[in-house]
Image 1 (tube, rainbow, N blue to C red):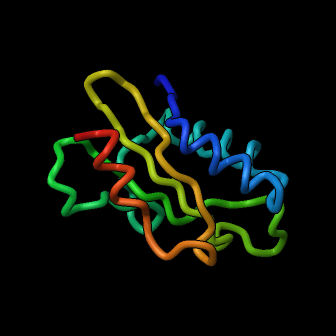
Image 2: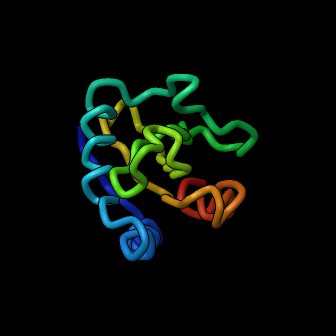
Amino acid sequence: MIFDELDEFERDLKKLLRKYWSSNDDLEVVKKVLKVEPNERPPFSYRIDGLGIETCVIKVKKIACKSLKGRGINSGLRLIYAHFEAEQRVVFVELYHKNNKGNEDRERILNNFK
């Protein structure tokens, strides 16, 4: 499995690292899981529908964060990624905390995968 990330994703990660120091480690754990099972797996992750594109875009809602002790997978972190099954590639699109942002940036998704 090949992992790529958008430039905007790198900026998102740098912002989160200021508040959630374990974000890099938490992302590595997510990568290990995605190597085994990159498709959506409710209730942990869902496919984002209604985008009008062929690319499979998935939102991970249950990410454990070491910086938020006692919260477990209910940390509030959200990860959006695009999965290209034929190429065995995952592109990280967006990472945010649910308190800072309500939903995924659909415009970012459409601009990069149309």
